[in-house]
Length: 228
Ligand code: 6GU
Image (cartoon, rainbow, N blue to C red; front, side, top):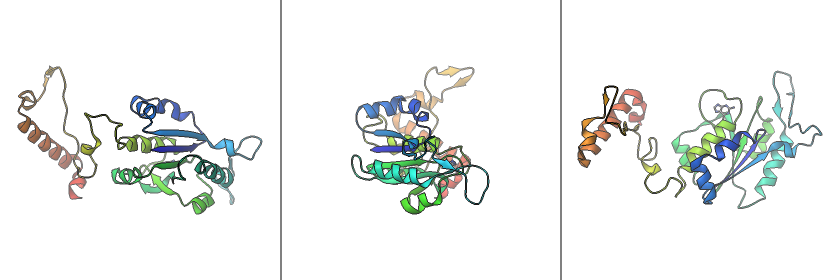
C-alpha cells in the first residue's frame, strides 16, 4: 500500500512515520509513505500557495494551480494514479467501513487542507473522495491524514505480526462490540484484583466471560452499535 501525502507542513509527519509499527512496515516494504511539500509547486517567488478569497471574508484559500499540478505530477510517478482523498470537515465521516473500503486501493493521494480550505475548482477538477474524521474542526488535514494512514495500515497483511490480528478489532466487519477489559500482572493493585475467571485457565469459561463483558460494555456505552 502506498500513500502520497500533499501538505504545507511535511515536518508534522516525521515523528509519526518513525513510530514503531509503521516504521517496521515501511522497512519491510509493506507500506510506502511519500510526503510532498505543496510549496514545491508554487508559481510565486515567495513560495505562496494560498491567497485571499474572492468576495472577501477572513482567512486564506489554497490556490487551484499548485494543488492540481502537484497531484498530476505525483500521479505520473510509480504504480498508477491512485485514488485522490481530500481531508476536509465537509467530507463523509470516516469509520471502520470506510477504512476497509479504502484499504482495497493500492495507492492513495491524501490532500491536506489548511486555512479556509481549497479553491472549489480543486474539488471540481479532481473529484476527490472527501473525508472528515468527525464533527469537530481541526486546524488542518494533517492529523486526519495520520488517522487515516494509522487505521489503514492495520489492515495490511503482515503489518501486525502473527499473534495479533485486526479481524477481531472493535468496529471491524463481523464485530460490532467494544473490547473486553484486559489485565496483566500484578494480580492485585491497591485493592483492585484481577477477575478470578482469568486466573483459572479454563479457556472456554474465559472466552464466555470476555464475550459477555464486551456485550455489557457495548450495551452501556454504545447501544447504537447493537442496533446496527
Ligand atoms: Cl479531515 N480536516 C479538518 N480541518 N477538520 C476536520 C477534519 C478534517 N475532520 C474533522 N475535522
